[in-house]
Amino acid sequence: MEKIIIIGIGGGTASGKTTLAHNLVRDSGLNATTLVKLDDYYRNRSELSFEERKKLNYDTPDAFDVPLVIAHLNALKRGESIACPSYDFANHIRKGTTRKLDPKPVIIIEGIMALAIPEVRAMIDFKIFVDTPADVRLLRRIHRDIHERGRTLEEVAEQYLTTVRPMHDLHVEPSKIYADIIVPEGGYNQVALDLLVGHVQKIIHHHEK
Image (cartoon, rainbow, N blue to C red; front, side):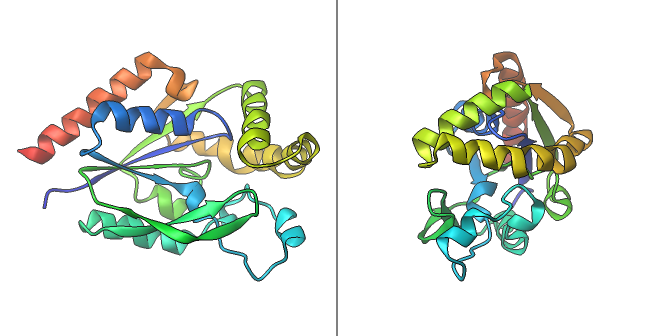
C-alpha cells in the first residue's frame, strides 16, 4: 500500500479549522480523505461528577487522550479502520458510541492542539495553522457554544477568560511556528482552500500511480 499522508490543521478556538477541514474533504473527494477531529479525543473523565467536569481545563494538551490519538493515526497509516470515539460537549464526557473511520490516501486531523502536542505533530506530514483575529474567534465561539453545546453566555465568558485565552497564548499561538502554511480565516479563505485542494489532489494522483 502506498504511503498515507497526514495533514494537520491547528489554530485557535473557532478560527475556522473545522470549516477548512470539511471544505477540504468536500472539494478533494470523500473517497480520498478521512477526517479525524481531535475534539473527539478528549480524555474520558466519567469518574468525575458533572460539576467537577465543568471545572476542568479543556484547553491544554493534557486534556486529550494522546495515546489513543497516536494509536488510531498509526492504525490508519497501516491501512486499518478505527473506531473513533465521540464526545458529548454538553455533558463533558465521552459518548458510548463510536464511528468507523476507514483509511484513505489523505488523513486530515484538525483541532486546537493539532500542532501543539509534540507526539501528534511528529506524525503530521503537512502542517496548517489557521490564523483568525481573537475578536472574531470569540464571537464565533459564543454563538457555537450557546446554540450547539448548551452553554450560557456566562459559562462561555468564564471559560474563555479562565482557560481558553490564557491556554491559547501558552500552547496554541506558539505552535504556529511549526506550520508549513498559515491560512487567514480558515475555510472562508477560498484562495487558500483552492491551493490546498490542489496539493491534496497531487498527493492522491501520486498515490494512485
